[in-house]
Length: 70
Image 1: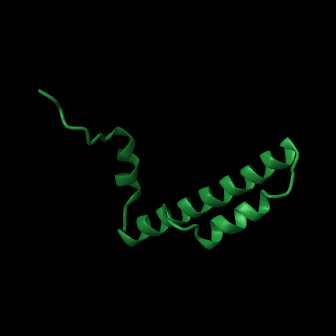
Image 2 (image 1 turned 45 degrees about the horizontal axis):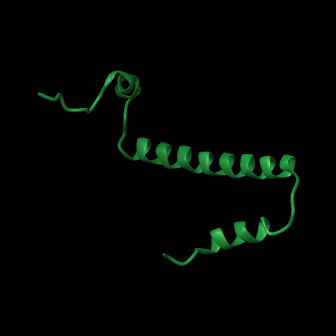
């Protein structure tokens, strides 16, 4: 098993104190928002780096990459 990184250690410290269910839910919500924000920022950076057009991005929901069997 790998050692915990500094972020994981800080989160463990945060959860060592007893929290109500409401507080735990709020902490999880805040963490999820933070992670989602980072993912969107990374996606935006990649989108801009590749000079992707709006027309190209609008086609993505209709594309699939699964190979046909058989």
